[in-house]
Image 1 (cartoon, one colour):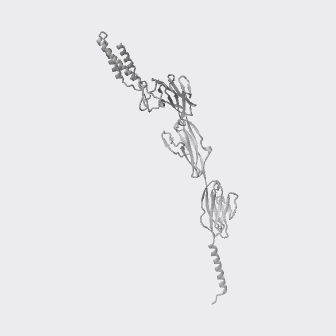
Image 2 (spheres, one colour; image 1 turned 120 degrees about the vertical axis):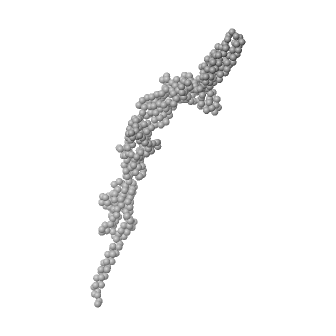
Image 3 (cartoon, rainbow, N blue to C red; image 1 turned 180 degrees about the vertical axis):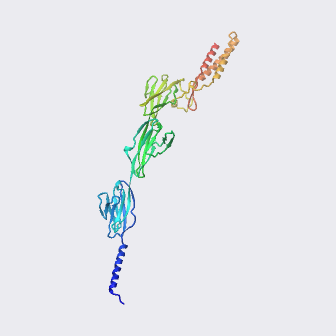
Amino acid sequence: MRKPWWSLYLLAICMLGLDSKLVGEAFQPEFAEPLTNLTVPVGRDATFRCLVQNLGGYRVGWVKADTKAIQAIHVHVITNNHRVSVSHNGQTVWNLHIRNVQEEDRGQYMCQINTDPMKSQMGFLEVVIPPDFIAEETSGDVMVPEGGTVKVSCHARGMPAPRILWRREDGTDIVIRDSHGSKKKVQMYEEETLTMTKISRSDMGAYLCIASNGVPPSVSMRIQIKVHFHPVIQVPNQLVGAPLGTDVTLECYVESSPKSINYWVRDSNEMLISSSKYEVLNTVISSFESRMAVTIRKLTAEDAGGYRCVAKNSLGEVDSVIRLYEIPGSTVKNTTPAVRNEDYKYSTPMEGPDNQFGSADRSDDEDERELDEVSSKPTNEHSVHNSTKNRTHNGDAVKRLINMIEKEKRNFAISSAGELSFKVVDTRIFIIAFISLYVVT
C-alpha cells in the first residue's frame, strides 16, 4: 500500500528542523583559554586578553565585576575612564587595555559573550606598590645621654605590606640589651621599632632602616643616633724625657660627644699654638674620638715643665698634665749608622725615679766593693815606705777611677734596635774619687 505523499513531506520538514538545530548547537561561541590573572606595579600598563572561538554574530563585552561597571562592548568603550581602551585581532583575540594602572584599578575583570545564557570568564588584576616611608610615623636623628634608652621607629606603606630591617651603616653589629642586663649582637634587626637600653658611646652612629616588599625599588632611611657624654682624656705617657736639642712629642687621646674644643696650656698658663717652636695637631679618629698632640722643637732647658691637654664641651671640662724633663747629655751621638736624624723625635715614658735614665752598667754591690777597697788602703804618714807604696796604690786607684768616670760619663748610647738607653753616673763614684784624691794628697 502506498503511503500518502503528505507523510513524506512531514518527515522532510522534521528532518530539516532537526538538522538546523544540530548545526546551530555545533557552532556556538566558546572561550579558547582561561583569562590570565595579572600583577602589575602601579604606574605600569595592564592588558587582559580574551580568546573566543566561533564568535559568529555574537559580541564580546568587558565588565569590572566588583563594581559591575561596564568597561566596553565589542569595539566601543563605555566607561568614562580615559585610561581604558579595547582592541581585537579578527574574531578571535579581544583585548582590554588599562594604561598607567592605579591602586583603584585592582579587582576582578570579566570577559563575556552575549549568548543565551551569557558565557563569561574572569581574571584578577593585582596592583602592587613599592614601599614608601610614612614621614609622620618615622623617626629622625636622635640624641640620648650615655646609659639612657632610645627608641627609633620606621613605618612604611606598600602592597604587599613592607618588611622593615635595621642595620648599622658601618657594618658593625647592633647590640640589643634586655631588662635583665643580658645582650646579643646581630647584623640585622627585623622590627618596625628599634629599642636600645643602657646605650653606650660605642652604639653611636648611623643606622639604616630598610623597607622592602619584593616590588622594586626598596627604600632606606638613615637615622643618626648621637650619644652624649662629658669629655674623657687618656694619656699614654704622663712623664716624658728627652735630651736638649731634640724634638719631643706629647700626646693625649680624647673621647667626647658633642665634639669638644681641645687645646694645650703650659704650667705658666700660656696657650700653645702652631709656630716655629710648637706644632699643634688635632686628628679625628672616629665620631667621638680624637688625638691631640704637640711637638716641641729643639728642646731647651726652659721647655721643661708641665703641659696640660684640655678638652671642653657643653657637658663638662677635663684636663691632664704631662711632665716634660731634660735628660742630661750635651748631644745625641748616633752610634748606629742606620738610624736617621728623625728617629730622635720621640716621646719617652719613664716609669719612676729609679728608672728615670735607664739602667747603669755597674751594680750597687760593685760600687760598694770599690769604695771598701779604696777606703781600706793604708795611710800611715810616719812611714815613708808605706806612704810611697800607698801613694802608688792610690795613684793607680785614681787612674782606674778616672777611666771609670770617663766611661760612665758617656751617659747614653743608641742601641742596635734604634732605641735610646740612658746610663747614669752614680754619685757614689764621685764620693770614691773624692776620698781617693784626699788620700793621695
